[in-house]
Image (cartoon, rainbow, N blue to C red; front, side, top):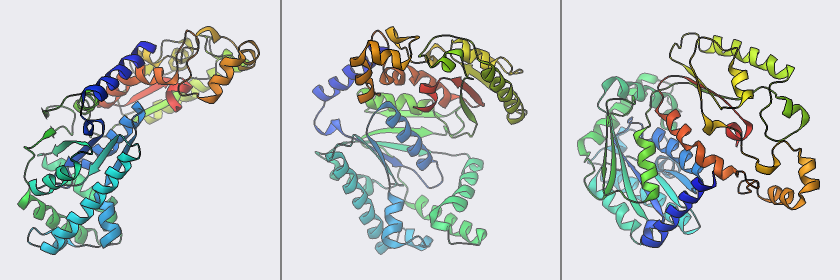
Length: 385
């Protein structure tokens, strides 16, 4: 897949050549009321961009607030008429923004700025700080489903560090609802600058994604990822195939059948899947097109199976079927090149790990889109790298 990696590199170079200096660094600034899935979305987006190879960091303003002012601030701290509280919250937001910009100057590419940022005044402050340093795209999460909001509120009370020292759930719930009301009083939807709005997309169906003034390769990839994302919980199970004959012989690549141990693993995996997903009638099994993954899935019954060529093992080119000792002896320069940089090393007439990452992107996007459980049976590079 060298062509795919080349296309990505070409797009990135075009962005650098034709974009302004500040556009080379990107700040995704979250906007939204509490309990709307901002942090969940921020974490997912951070992982996706890192997986694509972009230097990305998540800046959670709540952590800055707790470090400076403690974790036990009541709802009064968030009142819109509490000038001291407003100044304190703006101060920690500015500190987080300064840290993000410093990080970008040190080589960081994409900063995910996670806070409510619910007023125009706050957002203009951030835009002013970003001038000459980075491009801001606001990412607003909007949810109007009361059941989902109530579920998120319960999770917030149970998991947020703000309520870790609050033993009384009802007291914590009342405080958080008051905090939420305080934010609702002054909330101003995003209308300025470049923005993406995710409206009622939690379930992955029936929602809207609105985009304004978005251009460039990376912002486009972010939009593509978000339009396929949702917050609905579902299990995704990853496993390598059972041991193959080439694994036993220490040989790279190939398309051999399973060993006896591999067949035993496939049966045990089937038993596990049957117990784990016995109530999940809509689950699917994904494999590569190679025998060892298909045979590993064979004992699993009752679920549809889909073969993905994108899930195939890394193409080892002219080294296919060789042992690493044979490669070291016959092609010592290739052996040393791979040893020095496994991520970027490309087998002669084959692939690099970066090539594999690019061809796996459609699989990742489709996994994000799924609302039912998925079992992925693939190869070592795809499952663990």
